Image (cartoon, rainbow, N blue to C red; front, side, top):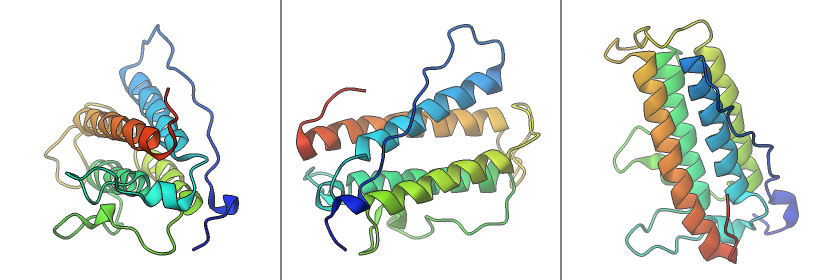
Length: 174
């Protein structure tokens, strides 16, 4: 895989959710969309070498691309499969969790494209459900719980991406 700018991911537009929220599910989706864009923008402009670096000794599998691949697997499992009931393969079956692992073909552009494709899949899988509905796969969770779980997971990993980006090239900020 080359290290050229053609493999770089482009930033995506972000919109801070409106302060007057009247719809619970709507504000949860708005914050998830904001956090998704934040995660993508932390990888935008990185070379492949920067994006696959694992600079944290205590977390030897944590790279910026690994975080995005993991978030893709999180959305697939929790939103599309568990809550939405979609008949799709899980992206994280195995131990240790393989969603963090990279291949030679993974570069910022391809991983971001896969993550963004998962957004559309998740949102279509949940079309027509309400926060009070039970998850369609197991019924063990409400859609509300699943969405909040994915929100906290995405926010947590956006924080990891803050650190990884700063270590990669010194860039800080939202």
